[in-house]
Length: 387
Image (cartoon, rainbow, N blue to C red; front, side):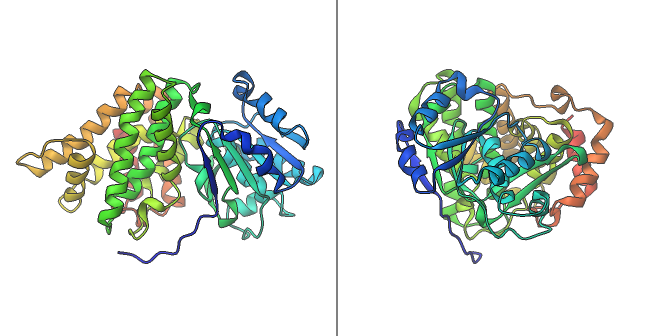
């Protein structure tokens, strides 16, 4: 078991009607609010009007139009400038993980005199950030309970993970009812996203029985409740469990004491969505079974057998290798059953830039820290297998 030093300062307010606490939550941080949101779905659902009504006594400035795979030039830079111009006290992110990720980068950029990219690229250490409150409308990334964000810089085909303790949200308001209107495709992608977060921590060299059980339970819950949510989008219990699983998926609690995993699937998917702007959870669903097949060997076999039996419900066979392969195939079949595309060509990605993307991943991702260390050649092989 590995040593660890862990702390999360985020307050989670969970459950139906929890948005009613928004005025008291925001008052603790000041009166001038930057309201950040995406393409307008919160206006269609009435959530925007609800938020504005609850905060009618506050001074609110808006940053709208934040895109999936949030863009540095399009949203982070103008958002940080607006915070400085209006002397913003606190950022309120209303939407999914992309809105919150963007808000985290804005929060740090607003407290820095130079280019925010200096912070995102770790050229300069982050020393302060504005407080962030979020109202989540999607369950997927887990950004509501972690200190990281992912920002895309399209002009350089970079999609960068930016992690710093200053980026923890101060308060996250999680009402599963707000996820009832999420499309079936985005629901499935969110489940796949959170599953991969869990899988990347489960596949590590040194693990504990406790963490194994938590990860396995998280994965089983996501699969069971994901299926229910697709059949019955307004099933509160299913949506609530998915939301809870997603919140736990990325803040480190699933892997305390484990050795590092390196998160290679995320490294590969960041390249896919940086070059082609595809949905993160979709890219992860396509890549994960192929990564598993690529690293399955005699050394990793016991881990894959555990995954197959304890997570995917595969009956143990006489041949452990066949059991392990059946577990991988069962994961693939689950993603298919959720209606997710399972080939890169289905999302508009052909062979033309695979070598370029593989090189990009190998240059910028700690592949030597992966459960099974990977090379640029390995990344390219996984990409090709995913076509």
